[in-house]
Image (cartoon, rainbow, N blue to C red; front, side, top):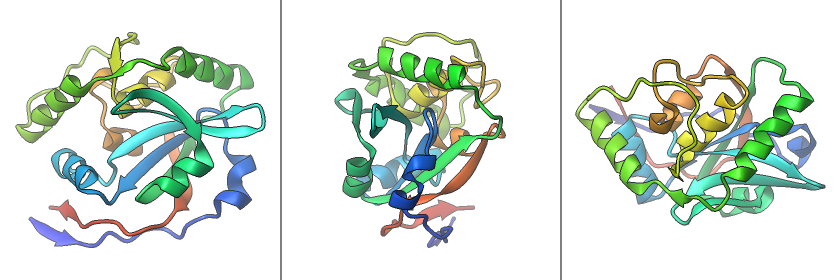
Length: 199
């Protein structure tokens, strides 16, 4: 296993691009904390967290599932407080206004749900020992959520399966990043990132 510092695309100004970020666009986080390093190590991923962007009147917000559950926070504060890079992804297929509204409503209905810590640990063990993940891939509302499962369900609510053949409940941030349904638009924040493992 070799270690190297990842190279990153040039960042884009959040201020200049704020008005181009749309409801349901995905945020993938490349953290630099020990907790983020551990997640990236176990999942063999560049990314340690996931969320979505939503508009609340004139405020642009980030919605994600964290340790205290599913929350919403101004995206500007989210980017400012985050230790690492925040990557901005969007759907390759043009989504209608109705689809984006349905995604936001679905995401809002999950607010306040608890964080699925045990499921996240179970997913980590599945990846660590290369056990097969659950393949039942229909949309199901979960009682508890972790970040990438939350994002996968939001997209599944409008018929976009970000990782075919894997249950939304066991989707990783890397699965989302590699989804053929998405395109990366840029990095909204550049910061120091820990080294990640590569083959």
